[in-house]
Image (tube, rainbow, N blue to C red; front, side, top):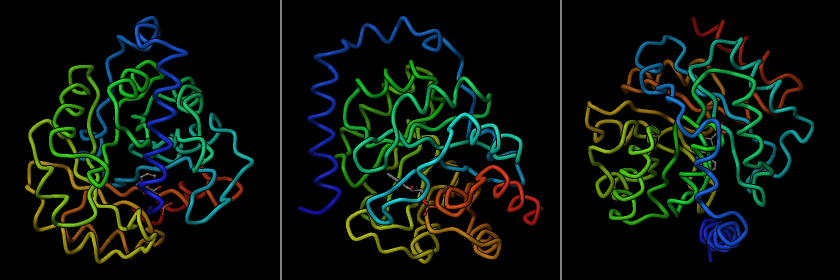
Length: 260
Ligand SMILES: O=P(O)(O)OC[C@@H](O)[C@@H](O)c1c[nH]c2ccccc12
């Protein structure tokens, strides 16, 4: 069993348990449930910075990155820095996040928020909406085409945007459909943790032009962004490079300044 299989097996148990404790009808009572979502795709199309900054305490590939974060402060720092959106990891077991992190970020900023999670069930989409997300991530490596279709259409019916993540040509070809807003290429192979920006370069030509292209993971230099922009990318998801510092917001601000 690779790490991704393990994460998904644990996620299925976690979601089953959550469903028994908190029935999904509860989510409709959230003040955020009827909120109009902010568009990340729109922000990326109209921005020069193109950065989606992530809140990530640890990961299976790096163990601890930053355990002493205050997610509200990080969110405000990212917003001040001028990012297009923020990604909030909500997985507890492998990434040290929580769904409450999303809520705290939502309470602190207005920028588009992506719920970064291993989504396998509509329950998690209702939960994402209730806790203030604007965008959800679907990972092609763990979903069939039919699951991608059902989950993305359900997300859209809630007013959420959808970022679909792929790592190779096969995943990309099985996933392209109109209910997606953005296509993300993960430079990190979630099964082996190998990182290479070549993945984004190779897949860029295969992504239809009507989707906003996002390059994810392993990005730490201005040069990398300039090169990826030449390959048509309009969004760049950066986590560790900001989170490993004492002040992720300030790091994002400096990065963005040197980008402009
Ligand atoms: O910290 P990095 O290398 O800048 O990567 C951020 C983000 O792309 C990464 O956390 C990520 C991309 N796809 C995921 C899916 C699940 C968990 C995490 C991820």
